[in-house]
Image (cartoon, rainbow, N blue to C red; front, top):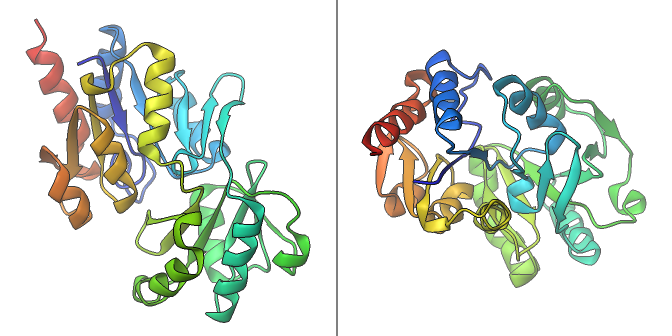
Amino acid sequence: MQAFACDLDGTLIGPNGVVGGRTRAAIARAQSAGVPVLIATGRMFRSVKRYLDDVGLLEPVVCYQGAAVVDPPSGVFLLHRPLALDVARDAIAELATLGISPNVYVDDQLYVAAENDYTRRYSVFQRLPVVAVGDLLAWLERPPTKLVAVAEPAVLAEIRPQLERRLGARAFLTTSLPYMLEIGNPEVTKGSGLSFVTERLGVALDRVVAFGDGENDVELLEAAGFGVAVEGGHPRLRAIADTTCSGPADEGVASVIEAVLDSKP
C-alpha cells in the first residue's frame, strides 16, 4: 500500500478527542516507511489543525467533507468548492420552516443565528469560537463552505427527506456525527477530496487503505483500494467495507496499519 486515509472523529479519536499512544506509534512507523497517513474529515481546518500538528501530519488534509483541501503548514486552501449561495439560502429557508437554524461555515469560521445548547456543546468539543450573527438569510452574502443542521438523530431523520426534496441534486446531504446533517456542494465528497490529494502526491488511489465510521465516509472507502469500517459504524459503510476494525478506544486503526506494514516485503 502507498498511503492510509483516515477519518478523524469516531475512527482515529473517540469522545475524549485524544490520539492514542499505539496509534501515534503506528502513524510514525508508517511515515518512517514512506507511507503517508492522510486525514479526511468533515471538520473545518482550524478545528483539525491541532491534531495534525500534534501527530506530525504535514500532507494536505481533506476538510469539510471534501469541500476543501488545505496545506497544514501554510493554511493555504489548495481546493475550495463551497455550496452555491442560492442553494445555501434555500437550505436555510427550508430549515427555518422545520424549526432549525444551521451552522454556517465561511472563511474557516463558524457562524450561527444565535447561541444555544447545541452550539455551546459544539464550541466546547471543537475548542472553537462561534459567532452569532442574527438573521442568517440577511447576513449571508457569500457562498458558505458548508451548512450543518444540528438536532437529535430522530429529528434529522424526519426532516432529511423534505430537505432533499427542496434541494434535489443541487446539494450533497450526509450525516457525520449522528446529530449533524451536513449540506454541501454536490460535486465533492471525502472521496473526491482524497482523489485530489493522492493525485497531488503521486499516489495511486487503488493503493490506499481508508478508514471510517460514518455515512459521510462511504465515498471515502469507495474511492480507496481497500476500505475499513469501524465496528458499529454506519450500516451503509459496513455494507461496502472490505473489513472492519475496532474503534478508537481499542485503537483499531493502529492494528490495521501495523498489519499492513508487517506484510510489506
